[in-house]
Length: 373
Image (cartoon, rainbow, N blue to C red; front, side, top):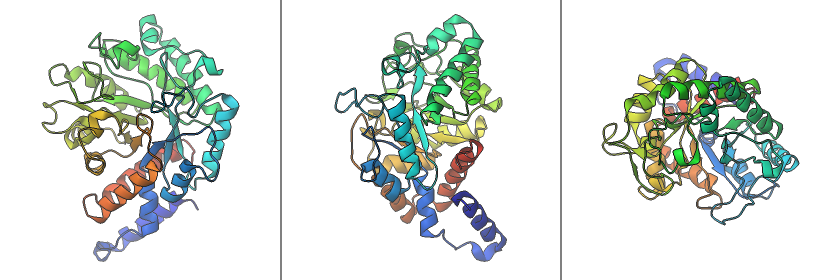
């Protein structure tokens, strides 16, 4: 019996016990497993031997996922996790073999410039969202998603952090428009082409992830580099692609943006905002699936808030998975660090066990639907 069904059985017993069960705490081993599933982390290495740091994090922190990169930003190197088909397939197989619960293994394979599995490493040529949108051909978007998914599934990657559904509202946006990551300046076109790309991903059983909620397309700054305020540029229609796709029941994951908008939350950026994540994404748009943060090491969060505070705020805002790329800045055993901080926050009563269980259930449901468990 796998851990998911053990958890369901345990939850049922607690529920049947009635009022007398209210003070019963989750056993430490189960809580550790649930906390670990909420962590996704990047790492260095083309292989994953039993003594590698990422395998130690899988073993010691029971982390739920990893993210692969083709380049190491901190080292300014073109070597990180991806060389060719054979190497990546071996890497992902080794990682899965070390985990008691199958891992989410993700990558940013949007197409065009944002392409971890690139043609110069033997992978198929890809088209950017802008090229697909400008073509006006929805079938091309479906085909692009299918080719992308086939590439990923063949090497053991089960999550694509795509499509981008940011509306192209600023032609000189340094992180969206300049990189050709948006399908269109028309939210309806964005929704249609993103839906086609998702259909292509789903045809090969690869998990999709909409990004960046509640919309990064109007920004004038790059949240990788610091505080990004869209108060005067963001508009409600940037929610349209999210709303339409969520209502079409096509959405597996949604990634939050580190953008600040005082009209949505006077204090916190979206990733740390209960008003944005729970208030808008969960309640207003009705999303019931997995919410993952953008990289928690991006400076819009990391330079403004401490590690522990940002973890606390993100989880209490409603995020299910905390993503640490471990690439802009590299930190050995970052998965274990995040695990220990989350566990400490639960022990201090700042994050409830019930909040952890909610995320765990959503994560395990998604893994189950894609037959990972």
